[in-house]
Structure formats: structure tokens, C-alpha cells
Amino acid sequence: MGMCIWRQKIIENVIEIACEVLERLIKSAPEEVQQQMKDNIKWIKGAQENNLVVGSKARILYADSEGRIEIAKAFNNAIKNKEISAPIVLGRDHHDVSGTDSPYRETSNIYDGSAFTADMAIQNVIGDSFRGATWVSIHNGGGVGWGEVINGGFGLTIDGSQNSEKKLVNMLFWDVNNGIARRNWARNKEAIFAIKREMDRNPKLKVTLPNIADQDLIDGLTK
Image 1 (cartoon, one colour):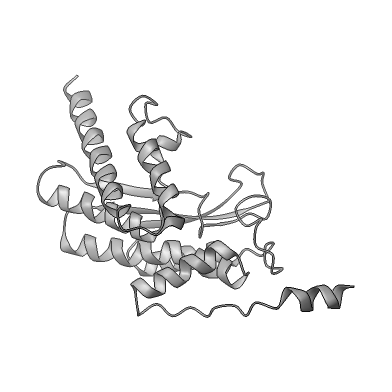
Image 2 (spheres, rainbow, N blue to C red):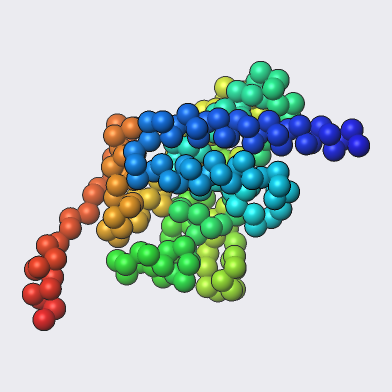
């Protein structure tokens, strides 16, 4: 019983911290990002009633790199300040912007001809490993069938240290923006917006933007 109470308290602290971070970020977020944050806040607040079961969106945050980094930093500070009494592991197996090459699901909206390649998941885990991931994995399957997808996953231990904060900032930034950059090159409208916003926030990030052909010209060539 004592262990259950201890675990429950950690879960409650984590949920509260994540929600506080998103409620702070939404105040200055552009309109294009606000609905995503509202959805996350709703999922977080419903986490307890959904019992944190695998597959429940209450335990998964579809946040951008800013949201993920700020939440992870808040977790790290809470551990440092003894508000959370144990390390936290952030993890992902697949189903994400950068970690899955799945032409029938996650990369189905990549229209530049590269949807059927499996390079992004490999780049993802190599970059994550260099930037501080505790472990990385390459695996197959992931909900669409063996041979139909390559997944790159990671685990990142947060222990309250300064070194932990450095790793989480570097790794999560790459983990998200690797996939956004690829979708930007494929001329995905939302990805172009997201990568421009990331470059404005972080001047060190330099990503080539696609040249968009005039639609009238395209229509004329295809007639």
C-alpha cells in the first residue's frame, strides 16, 4: 500500500507540472498551436479517470519541441527540488513526427516521393544518441504490420542534474525537428510554419525552406 501511495503521488505531481507548463505556454502561443495545447491540457486533466492505461491519449503528449522541452525541464527542476522523489524516464517507441517511417500512417502525408524510404527513423536515433538519449532502438511493426514500417525509439532519464537538463534540451530539440524538417522539404504547409517558428526561436537552427511552384504553372504543365 505504501508503494502504491508513493507512486500515485509522483503521478499526480507529474500531471500537475505538465499542465502548468502548457497553460503558461498557451498564453503566448500562435493561434496555429493553441488548439494542440488545449487538447493536451484536456488529456492531462483526464489522465486520472483514464487510469493511465496504454493507448490512452491522457498519457501521451503531442506537443511541439518547445512544449516537450519545457515540460521535461520542469520535471528535472522538480526532481532537483525534491518535489518529485525519483528520476523520470521519458520514452517513445514510435508514432511520432520524427521517429517513424510508415507510408501508410505517420509518413503518409509526405508527397515528395520519399514516403517509402526508411532514413528518417535511422537519422532520428543516431541524432538522439549523440545528443544524450539514455538508450535508442530501431524496430519494425508498430501497428501497421511487419515490413510496413521502421521505427526509431528512445528513452531519456531525467534525474534533476544540470547535465540532465543539457541532454534533454539537445535531444528533444533534435527528436522533434528532424521530422519537421523533412515534412517541410516535402512542402507540408503545417511543417513549413513549424520549422520557420523554430528557426525564429533558435537562431542556431538553419533549415532550407522549399521553393513552392506557382499552382497555375503546374496546372498548365499537366493539361
